[in-house]
Length: 82
Length: 418
Image 1 (cartoon, rainbow over the protein chains, first blue to last red):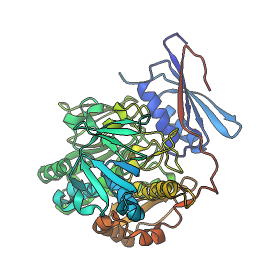
Image 2: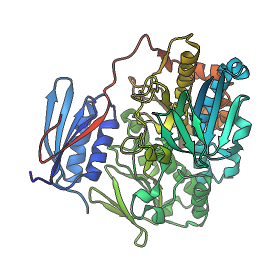
Image 3: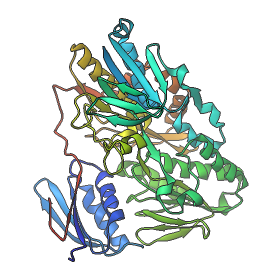
Image 4: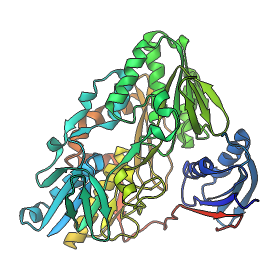
């Protein structure tokens, strides 16, 4: 990761659909290629939603980790228009 | 003297001021309390009516009344919008330079739909989120439309009235069928969400109806730009679609007074406790409705139910006579789905929306709300609403699980800050 690339942690724990995916999109809007976004979510729907978004958009789903009571979803921004 | 200042004369602000004037009647008469409502406009619109203006041709004037007709005795309406909120000095400055001190503040300044936030959107689209006159432009354009692609797009979240984009697609379908040109029109629905409606149970109702009506859906479409000349809309994800008519829900942000006072989050919404509706970190300031940062529907019903809690809690503080209340996140958003049928998107913080069948009863209940809205603002229908909505608040002595606040932490150069 270069010095200009960012690693953002988005804490959406306690928020239900569409909260986590909406928080991810906000971060995506301001992200640059190469940035890593880590989404923390207690809503189990976030797993399928983020996976589907990454597949459709062509961004890289790096990992989904089952932490104690929440998910840690790691996405690398590899595709974004502009 | 206990001075309550309510900022914003929309649904939530008007209703809160009326409730306070009613509950503090004796104190106001005795000169021991005052309720000042600070707003910009003398005209008060019923905002959900904009869908009817846009897709059914209703005169926007039908959904407007003078603010002064809606206020109870005891409310001092100041038509002079707030431009600065200062928690430290407990004061509000208005556009004309007047400084209002307060003992209790209610921020009900709403959300602003702002097409200028997306390049090309203002020039290339129409919308029903920026007032009745703009909604009327849609109706006028529809009269001349003879065929082609109509795109309905959600260009930013959160936005007011979550069901309204889906309703727009349903209402467009119905409009073109009535005109007899549905076979010449492609309706395309672009949403950033994973499904046609964000809540899964509701989407399971909407999705087959969209399919049956031939409304095409493209999910995960976060609007990036619009090219008004080429009539093309682009997503951040790299998709693009052509359109002949674009009806878009603009991105929203908090009110200028919140942004300029430096009391909002990155989108200009006020950090607010989702139960007591107190501004986070402030003992004597509350926030309701679209102005809050709470991840709950931005809708009139939510503002209404939160107003009851806030008015109660302020009176509790003034009279020291009752427990605080907490709002339980109850939402109730009606959605028309065509053919005189509707569903209600109902939920709380802890109970997501449930499955249901579209019905005519719900449709006529939705229609009737436009008629009772004005009476609802003065508080005279609260018993009816309590019966309809059920439990929407509870005493603070029995709090729910503590809420985790949404926080965005940013670090540079690969360091984690979890």
